[in-house]
Image 1 (cartoon, one colour):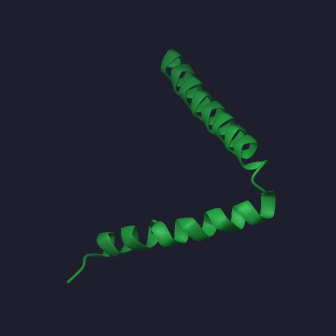
Image 2: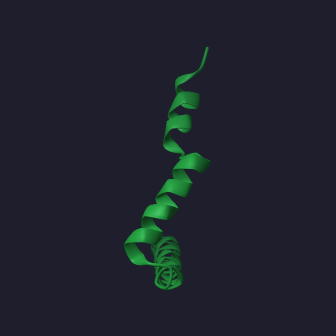
Length: 64
């Protein structure tokens, strides 16, 4: 019927309904004014994380 991989993937990703509920909860908790700032901070954090991973891979390559 369904493979384990398909079932695991289906349960791991939230659907549109779940995303709307999560967004509404965030909106109620933080208010509409703070959401852009939170999104900006989250984006900056992700960017820094990716940069540090890339720098570490570059450092590993130089050591070999």
